[in-house]
Image 1 (cartoon, rainbow, N blue to C red):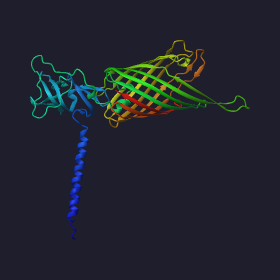
Image 2 (cartoon, rainbow, N blue to C red):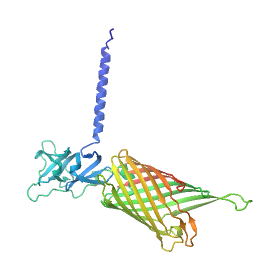
Image 3 (cartoon, one colour):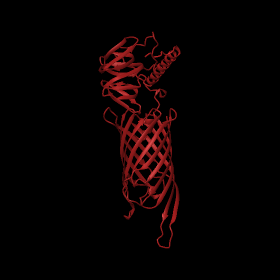
Image 4 (cartoon, one colour):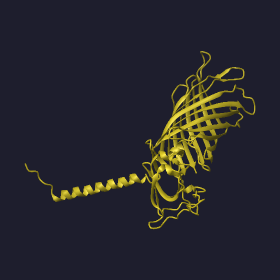
Length: 431
């Protein structure tokens, strides 16, 4: 049996299709590799792959700012692969100082210098590495081909030049995941501001008494980074509440009526601070201590209370996601006068996870609960029974520009005590 051979035009079309497919593969490969620029990722010996930027090496430990904003520190011996471009000042354990670009591969440090050429040694010999800073305060770009880099003074008493300050424009913009975890898990850099304004709608229905509550509120939160391990925050909210309740007759001849009320008021402002107790490591999580004080400014007796809170936040990242948890204790105190109610201790907790799909979009899922003791007046009469509401929260954060974000949040009840459903829109400005 003889098979017909394809004609020449068909062969030409097949050849052109192969060329187009090869070109697409090359373009895709180049685009995929563009995000992994030198210094944008690091591989550890235990198999972890982290995105972010290298901030330097001090005392034989790498300072790595992850994509979540945290600075992780681990021995250089734990690094399996890392490449850093531009000019850096490096110091080895034998006292030798070099200037050039460097990389780590399979336990060995390679430094490329226009003066000394290529130097290769065990990575354990690296003591410090800092970006080279010129007299203008900016890191010089890589030297052109054929032009030597300025040599360091390697004589006795020579010091490695260190940047006195890092220009803000050279810092990577905050990611959507950092913004999503802004509440307490991720602290701001010194001098950095975070301003968030929200609009929230909440609906709740009480089963024990036929009451429907619609609430519309707006709040403002301002955060300020003070030191690398401490930040301050100020929060305030105003709300409108509409409540409608069915009133059943006390006699057989009566009829069911509906009573409603509208209340517009402002919440008491709160001042809080977050302090990093333990930085995140390869195994252990980051631990942040959160404390706050609510100052009574309203004349309503139920709101005229000081409230102090103290909590711990835990965060563990694993690129491109994060797991976080927290527990908080709150204590009511008398305000400017004695409260008509007996003071209470309240406890809240949460457990959640988040993932950064990219630098612009992050998703979060969290389960949260509280323990609310009974509210009793000074005579011992019960005002409200104790409750243990448990809810689930889902939210997404999207970066609009380099310094602005929008966030959508949805909260749903998980048990009878948690009878509120809410939708929240937040605009965030970080600079």
